[in-house]
Length: 356
Image (cartoon, rainbow, N blue to C red):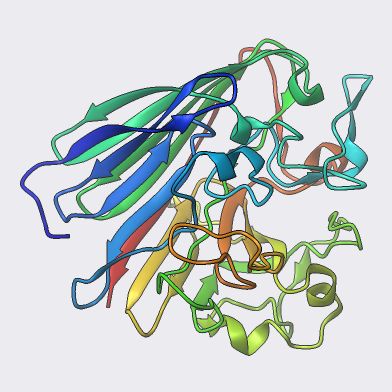
């Protein structure tokens, strides 16, 4: 790929759902030649092509070339996650004196919105172009009671790719009843485009993280990272820290934890994390308005699924899911995740790519 004169968005067929609905893939291209492919099914990011230090492009996210594997997307590859990203203990919470039971799809807990979630439904898509950016706006109305959640939730999600190789995700939602909400994206990144992520160097801007119990539910503690393998405040090769003897790494089979991001009040978007792949020189910087980021090191990928070019192998990709904290509806000292009528849920996360 080479730089181009204009930004563009190009739709193409991507298969047919079992109910007969056609799925479309939209290719966003900026003037640097960077491309992002997104589907109107699950608002899934299916490909991101970015250059290395010598200008060679590679696809740096896991995904599939056909719609069929996405219909059983148990790893949530590339999808928008909702209504609630991450886990809710036993799928239960109480709100305004009423008890709610959600689907238990990650026994004994509720995970990433339930059996359907936002990752398994069609979204309305509208493409747009600007002078220096291109994007897609997805909209969807989640009906009252969907996956057990109260209230009708109207959601708008915008993916915008600019000429600085930054992919911005803008989330917006309103509701007619009080409901938990915690939207995120579940893309799996490998900045080499192949192989393991153990050589990737990661930095996470967090002095604290959330230890979890055996079911991966936060214990409630905001633990100091100092002196632990969760101290990623300085650039650290994942392979240097992931197998350090530590009870939390044993529970997660590696990293699968929420980090409490350090506040940067002077910044609208605070630095969450950065990742560098030393061989290619590719770098990804993640900034966000969210209070946390879930770092997941691909511990449950097992090679049984084959993607665009290769099997999705153990620790072959990583996720950095910007979010509010897991199980917040049941842990009152965590940042609030309840959206009420008259309020607006609005948040932004940016993935910026470069090479050095």
